[in-house]
Image 1: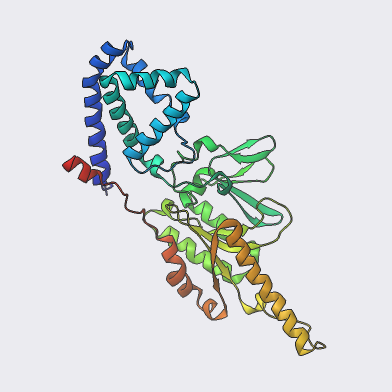
Image 2 (image 1 turned 90 degrees about the horizontal axis):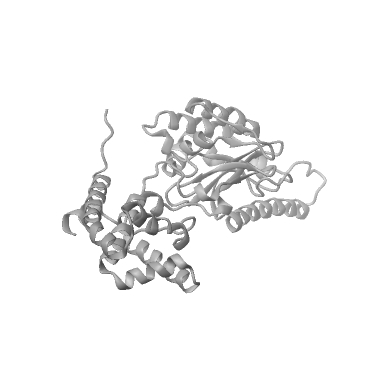
Length: 355
């Protein structure tokens, strides 16, 4: 079946085409009155400055007006710092209406061409790497991984342009998982290989039957999806201290919405591993209560710290929930995986019709 076209994207492409034609019509007057030699030189004078006038690594820009405003603000700042190219552009803008009109159309078209990446919410650099797994079997998941000076890092210049949804199945298939402090990766040739590694290596090593059952439910859900690459990767054994060897806390699972980047932790807390007190035969009730309190405080501190450090709210499931992992997955976890891209604030169909 042919993929259904996005009418809003089609409208955007038509607007871009119209802007290109309007720019073409303006070019002779712009070149004649500015002394700029060619279309190539003209576009280079404008387009080559985006990285200098805009914070493309961090800014999320949702409209052409916002894009133009930020670009002009950057231009003004650079001209005030004495940058020759910026001073020339400011002079042309103030003295030449042909150039001014051309620049505004050019910037609007530039925004529309790069709309998806400019308007996409993206992780900050410190949240662009995740470490998962057990102490001696841990792996890193990066957005744009590169090995440099003996360790892994993100190529921060490419984070914005990353083609897959952040922290999705497509993301993991694209980047693989990195081995700490070694120029080695675990790469996956297809979805089946990734899901087998997920269930049989990442999750099974935890030793929790409940985690294993939930992982199986997740794998089946992904396999049966019409668009598995867009499904959030259910990150197992998320490490609180990242790559640091000394272990403090781990979350059983963590899911990130690829559009909003909101994070939700999933913690399976059966009494047998999170509350049961052994060897208490010779203890007083007071001592038993103190032990139980210590356990409770540890668990609550863990979840408070995950929120403070990583911005993760955790859903905690106890024995009554874990009696039916299939039901738990379907009712509580599956909705977190069925994410949809928020409706954009800009309707290009409306713009095309009325503007």
